[in-house]
Image (tube, rainbow, N blue to C red; front, side, top):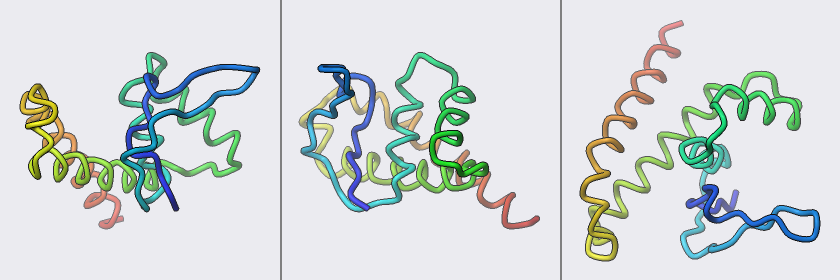
Length: 117
């Protein structure tokens, strides 16, 4: 599925009664829940509220493991982007890398635990 890959609140605009998504320059094919994970990282509402709203709208009552896979894909792409030259474009990204790597490790550990059960 084509995903935005930078789907956070700064790339959303409400106009004419609809939410419009801006800046598709980093779009690529990936699990769609990577975009939901990206939105959750930047949204002011709680993760639980956003996931609950998504579950209600989609009719899928168990998106947590899918969201975790989306998080792993999004985090890997962001880390790859920054290590592959993105730090020159966005120098402050060097400060973000440790948190991104820690988030990636945490989500990988969550997947590992789910595979045991």
